[in-house]
Image (cartoon, rainbow, N blue to C red):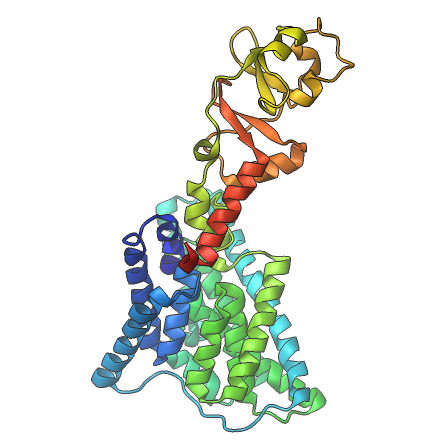
Length: 438
């Protein structure tokens, strides 16, 4: 999970047709790996679309889908069909969607809890006096001790999944396994082991769904097989953590060959991911980036937002004035309509504010007064390395139409206009949403 999501955005922002091909190769490889692991080519392909490419495009359809199908075919040829599978030929009644919705809410809450717990565990290890190179050893020892209680926590693959789907574990055993597996995942990632939560989230979701179904059956009765809730919980929790509702829906469809169940999974996946986005805002991979200072919310944010910087957008201009110059001098140099704002400089050519031409040419101004008397935005400016989103926020925060762009020594490098900034941001966004039009 960590690798594909981390690679997801860099190639999107590059211009030209050739730059998209390396990213498509990454997407094809990631999709093929998931397809081979779960015997589910469509789930693998949409995993690549949602988490690596962060879009559905016709250009990427052939290589990604071909790689997923080929990987599945080779895996079946060598090892035969494998992976958890069950067949559900029934229908899901309308009243069955109530417990499914409640399960999706629980899955969203569990996903947020797991992601925050990993971050908390990382902070605890970082603040501890234990040397960094010994932390994975401590984490591995702790997970090993937990495995003495339940060996199933060491696996998040098909063996553990089959145990949950096929066995008749009690509610107590399921909840204990859920707690132990969650703790093991949090400790292993927090202590420095590399990886993500993709397979672990599937197992945790299956356990949560099965335990919820048993409790619901005891309290209210149940018309749907319990194992169906295991599938719904598996996909809902995985979606809340990794953020791929379509991939999870196709995984359920290919596991069960049941369109009604796939529709229920899609409903629960969309509900859980909406809750996570509303109350948490991130998937696991972007949350990890966020903790490291990367203010992104999806793979598409990684690259092009970073490339569209203030330095690229600003207007490089030498139209500046000394703050000590008079209003009359500025009026002669900058007639009304020639520009919108002029940066003002102090004796050392450092930025001290902006002179708006609407203020400059107001009839109530005394022409003999210095420009410093009508200066605005003395504490508001932009840096060339800031992104277009930072600039938009700065315009809104300061209620400004134009801001100066200054360097580290407060020398004025140029100016940036809010209207131009918003227009360029909209153009770049449309290119990503509708690449065929550009």
